[in-house]
View 1 (cartoon, rainbow, N blue to C red):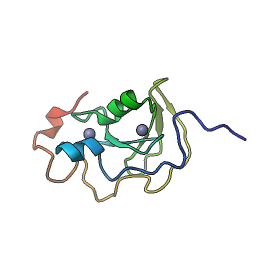
View 2 (cartoon, protein in one colour):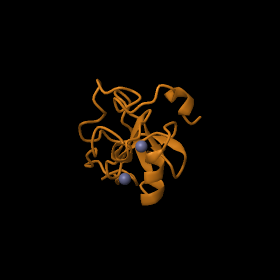
View 3 (spheres, protein in one colour):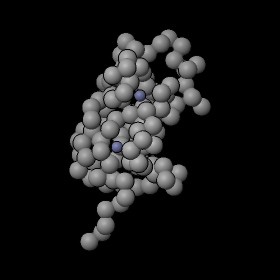
Length: 117
Ligand SMILES: [Zn+2]
Ligand SMILES: [Zn+2]
């Protein structure tokens, strides 16, 4: 039996289509990341509020997966390395017709100037 990789729960379902905190606060995101442990959807480090990384720091859930359509990479904050992971439960990504950045109606015109490097 292969042991389950630390930080990944292969049964975890995504919390929704968008960043939990941005949706609650009326913010916006660039790309979305999925916590591989609990399914929390958060925004990437280029996004203004960087909620995926904040979630990892606050919870100790140290592996994220991309929530962008077609992307299958995982990343481990503990080692700062890209890692491979299992196929997580559907939906694997946000809906293809969901705008990037998102969510619709919340993204400022000058959003590109507001990204983190
Ligand atoms: Zn966010
Ligand atoms: Zn989590």
